[in-house]
Image (cartoon, rainbow, N blue to C red; front, side, top):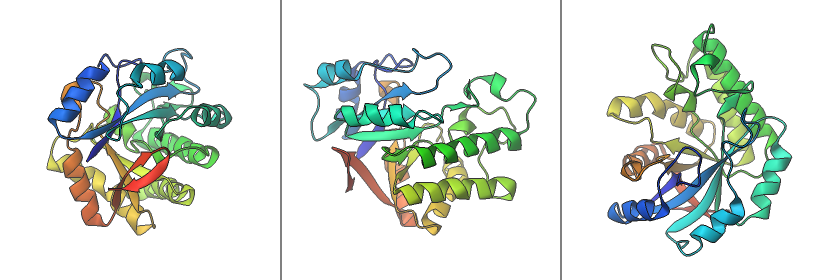
Length: 255
């Protein structure tokens, strides 16, 4: 069992030391993947990046069959060549492709949503995701498809599989399948069965369209979050028919 999405202090927004993460993984009887942020096209260019050489040098002694080294690439249109150069140059085990920035704005901030409806912001988010999946060539899994729901200020922030958003979600899922990427299930927002029930239809639809592989990750930025709901996620998605995988040396391995 692996938690395939962990941020240590090498990421701008985490203060967790590697030793804390490793202790938590051992306590929870988990393997793990350090996936530090490297965002392209971020409004503040030096904020969500790290030095890959320093990363591999600093963590070389910890790397093993149960602790792998990865990167979370923040995708933005027009930066696929730079991203591929990064991931091909360095010996990452696993590469997540995520959307954090839409129309030049970090969707974490309230300004992105001001004066716009949920349909407008979610459509823009899913369109940016679809474009980047089509453009990027060296990615293993699409990260947290429901990331926007963490921060959107709407009464119901979930991504719906109905109405006008359904076709946009379908296009994203079909693009993931065409690229033969895995689809990450990110457990950071999961607090109850109700939260699982709100997100699982996306993965059911992924399966219906022909998708088969998923990764699971807590997106932990602190030791207490490592492994959060990961086992439950594997159980729920496996029941759909999806296959849990990890990546080692950029090779997909079924668990």
